Image (cartoon, rainbow, N blue to C red):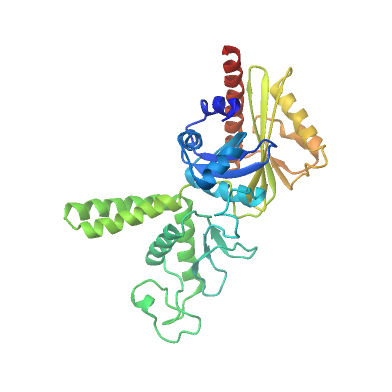
Length: 361
């Protein structure tokens, strides 16, 4: 273990995120995720290990980390970073496997399906989600509450699902587009906070079942509630809009500024830039100067959209870059800016904590 690693282990955050192990050349050799970064990263350097893990530890010269808002977010970010960097010690996620989405198909008789392929079509996608089992549980629940078509297009008699109340019934009757729209609107509402109402109703039913000693029913309801909680956990490092954007956040401490840039490509966060430097002027002026300089380098190509903190004058930023620059007051873009700012703040805190340790030696 290098002295630098020993110091950084002492100040790791107790938050979820991804960690990036690097060798003596600064090359990323392993990427992992953690519910608690402090505990997971420390575990590599405590006790003895065998095989691949020990070989990895022998080559680690430094590490970096990206804080996320949840374990789900860390899991999806881990996949994105592995596919982008292809670290030699990662094996499990080197294939083309992607996480599942729920999709309402764009058909005369639409269906609710699970897919791993997001296409630029007129279907409605919800996700991605880290667990296909939970996605299946949510799909079953929605099919029970707001059924769409489950039978084949060629069906000429009522299917089993229609008799169970889980198919809207084009196999048995003429279903209008307006009736489909009602079910689709309810499903969309479920994914936009409407799930909380259903979750509360299921919780009441579970408690009643337990009070009536119907533990089997209570267990099944608990499983549905847990599935809703798992699949509806918010994440923002991958989106279904397929857009390229850069998201900026910054923090200031002791006359130093840290700027963090999240690079979102085709809807996926694949890379991060970190810069720290002393400042003499107002933070807004320093940030705008950095923004202009950042894209003057040929390797930093401007995406179609740039998201900056709301405290920055957007007109000045547009004059400098001549590209679509936005503030975001709500939604996942605002949360991404907040996450970038949070990572910047932790980076500065780490810098000064390491300096303090150096002075105490």
